[in-house]
Image (cartoon, rainbow, N blue to C red; front, side, top):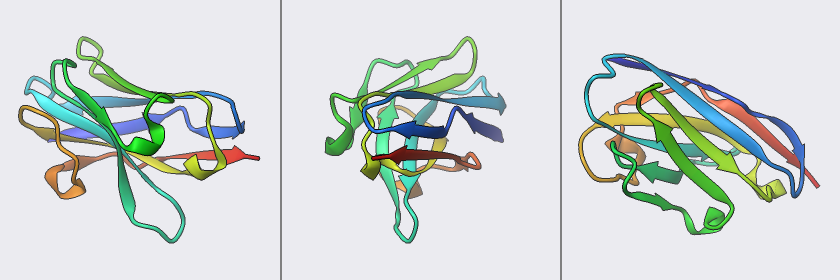
Length: 124
């Protein structure tokens, strides 16, 4: 079992930046693919970014490419999402997710472990 706890959300003006963190605890000795998803009110939980266990491969949804960067520090068991040039449409609850495996995954049903989420609100 792995426990995930997100932090770093908040209220920011359009054009601003935030960095989200996701601290993992428990069975962290395994190799986990990790990802960020987000869920706006009344909408589905959508993929944002994913990263391979060793950090070598990453991918993003088109709407955040060039603005968001996913990274991880395995020594600290922490996943990050640097979000720059934020837009009002980025407003959502952001969740980190993990699953044992190699490569990168895009579907929420690929992930076994989820955090509780952190709210990001971008004002116009």
